[in-house]
Image (cartoon, rainbow, N blue to C red; front, side):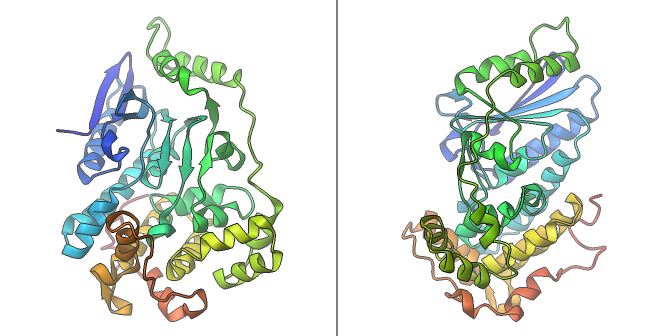
Length: 366
């Protein structure tokens, strides 16, 4: 059974992610179904726009997408399952397809929108959130890096908020996402079904006219930004070249915010904090295609860290997933365990592709 429900109504392709028990976490089959659908609609003149949402156990809306299926990552990482590599190759292709989609693509980002869920929504031409939206790129919590295009869209955030969000995995609730440009409009969740239906009702109007009408209605709603979380200290402490210097700046500040932020960072993989910081800095100057190619290289090294003689359960990524969702002891054994012990020799090889330029799994993205 597919976990993607699709329909075409009055010229609008509708996609509902329908794996509510897993908060719509993406499986390989879901990635493939969504890719196949979007490609078909891209080339179908009868489909003029696309709208995407997630369902929860009570019906449509309530949960968008919690990201990739990390339980599958854990199992596949230990078993050396080739579907693990297929997942990331095909997920990043899907992200690229969405970022370059030639038709209006409207994301109804209600509820949890994290990791891979951001990859499905940040390329949208209209990103609608609600008061119960929870946005985050929490990958460093599992020994990964902000992927699914995270190294491309996070650096579009103002100042050094990209570094802050990418390294800490901070959750932005409701209108907080507007302050850094990770959403376009915030609406009351009670009205979502009306906004969704407004794209398809009144066939006397063209699809473009219905989208214009939706924009007009959204523009008239209260979209005040909540930037209370975005303090000047973000720029003052995250503008350094290394995680160790960021740690020192937070320590020197000593403010309640700095202490809390430092405590969060000290729970993350020291190795992947280094990788993530460099990824974000590089991504600031990359096209989406080049950044996704970089991510595909990075994720290969995360699960097959050959330059450190690690694979499977010995990698920080599989260990991080184990601690968070398998054993749930929340005590990952990071290697190395201290930020000061990470060396350039550990980090640099992550950024060296194991493939030639022509053989890279995403070589043809443009």
